[in-house]
Image (cartoon, rainbow, N blue to C red; front, side, top):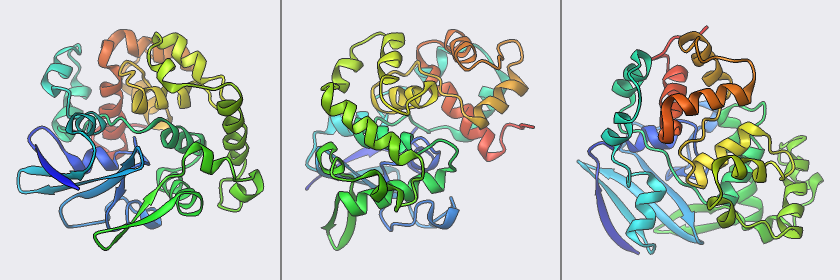
Length: 295
């Protein structure tokens, strides 16, 4: 594999990989979210994922991120979110004390762009599940239906392709602890195949049309659609709202708050603009970390 480096300035690899946005990146020692713990390693951040069947390994060393992969640099930079100028992103937001607090605490957190299929499956697993549990199920599916590949003496998990996972029955997926979400996966796989669902076509749609298209998939509601659009298909205006995000918005954005998901999400998109997803992730993770108080 070739190596190249990315400046670590304005890029917090640890925060980016462990803030709960992605389940497709793994800590190289295999301990990410293990046993429900989110603080797994005192060593320098060292993660990997697979794209187009090829491993991408990233490690923080001194003031650089060292990348090992056969993929083009441009593709890796976009996958990591470092193609965005964070200062420019935040300059588009209206002044807000809580977002400023989150920015100060979490500076360098980037919005990743995972491959569509593993990202979709991970969010189909997410309803009523905590982040460590989602990660565990994602890994179990990779281990059983994907591939365990040895790279430089390390065992790396490759998530299954759509064709590989199509071999799994609902019962088999339930045996991995997915519960009722197994049906979401099986039925969505059928739709992907029968309707020749093309995520690249979704990527070219307007946001509203893209979200409705995502909801054609079984088990995909507004929040899951927004997560996949934001973390996989480049819709940086998407504003997913889960329990933490809802609490933070209810406490600190009273004038914009609504109990209706669509109305609240639209209010936040209109308020923060084309990079609303960045505002969402900073506010969401700040609330989870206790940097922004919630009820």
